[in-house]
Length: 95
Image (cartoon, rainbow, N blue to C red; front, side, top):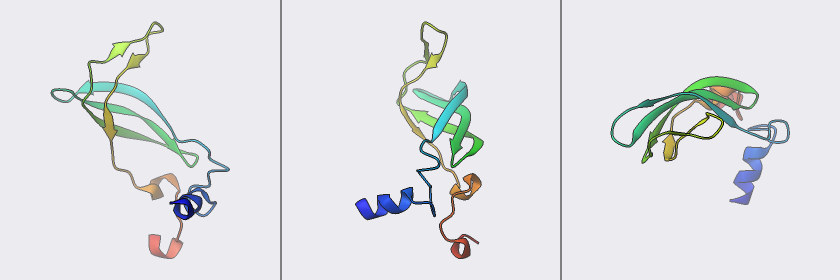
């Protein structure tokens, strides 16, 4: 939906020109059942960094690359409040 995407990138929402990337840097991986893991790390969005936990399902066993970095595949999900990252498009409604 081009108009929606344009609005999400605009300064009154994500401000993609000023904050062009969202990053996640993992700090730990813990088993949470068969083919499930909890991945804890720092999510940076809109210039704000917060620790989050990703629930990863359908994952293989974590493996290390030649440099010792842990690799894990699967589908990751989490919930977050955009206001915690300073993302607000309507101050009246957000209150």
